[in-house]
Length: 297
Image (cartoon, rainbow, N blue to C red; front, side, top):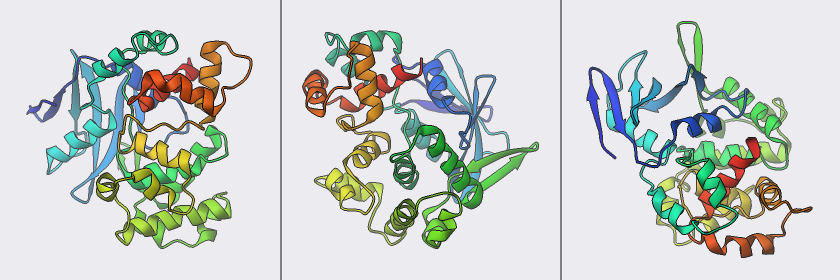
């Protein structure tokens, strides 16, 4: 990934298979999203770098991401580059995925329709895990409502020109909470316990992206934690560690998308999904992401 700084702006050259428009479609999918704002096709987001909040403004021109810093420039530009590389999965060679599914009747039409769509990741492990926990067994709108409440009560914010820009709460803050602190936000007792428990795992050094990357079986490691089942583990491996072979096969949205695309009368079984996915071997995460995309036409 090539980048440079010119006149105070960070410029990142994008891979050939990259669609800024598709990124915006994904990022705008909920009006309840609190961790970024989109205005006139510019993305505004705060990130934590060198223990301070930095506001970034992302725009696009001539296949280059242009990042400006409306408040102040970061001390370490590399951390911003690394974050954006992980957020938009810029180091992934999508031509390999496209080649692998070029003759797959289910995915090929989606590849043509959403060409350049990249995995929009969740670079922070704590955010990825707790967002997945919040989304368990509820609809997406209420999951966003829970996240918004969590962020507004325990996150940090940067205020600039009367606009508020929020950052996700740190595990250190959440680890010190009591279950009732989250129950007051309409978390169930179980979800409150799981979120606080994950925060403690991270704070006490038993869980990190580095630990998962070095694990022989990161999914098994995650499933050993309270509140983490196979779906949550695969979701986190897919969205945070950007593992292309992670496959949340039990995902209801995935099942609905396959049913819709194949014009079936009922959802595919897990066995049917696994049979269908033989053509996607090694790229199950991207296949899932493109199928999810088909649900919000």
